[in-house]
Image (cartoon, rainbow, N blue to C red):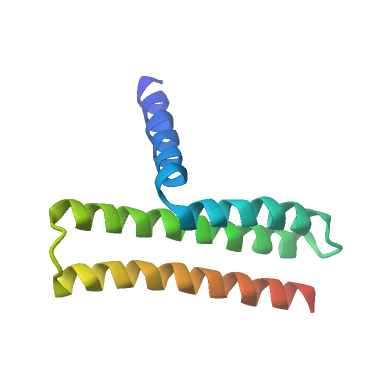
Length: 111
C-alpha cells in the first residue's frame, strides 16, 4: 500500500509541476475541461464519446511526455546541440500528432 500511495503522490506532484510550469499544459487542461463535458452531452454513441474523450487524454499525456523530455534535456545542458534539438522536436511532434488526432476523431464522430 505504501508503494501505491507514494506512486500516487509522485504522479500528483508531476501534474502540479506541469500545471505550474507549462503554459501549453494549462491551455490543454482548460480545453479538456470544455471539450470533455461537451463530448458527454453530445448525441453520439458511447464508443464515439469514449474515443473523443480518449483523444483529449492523449494530448495531455503527450504534453506531459514532451515536457519531461524538455526538462531532462535542459537539465543535461542548456547548450544548443543537434541531438537536444531533435529530442525536443520529436516530443513536440508527438503533441502535434495527438492534437491532429483530436481533430480527426471529433470530425469523424460528428459526421
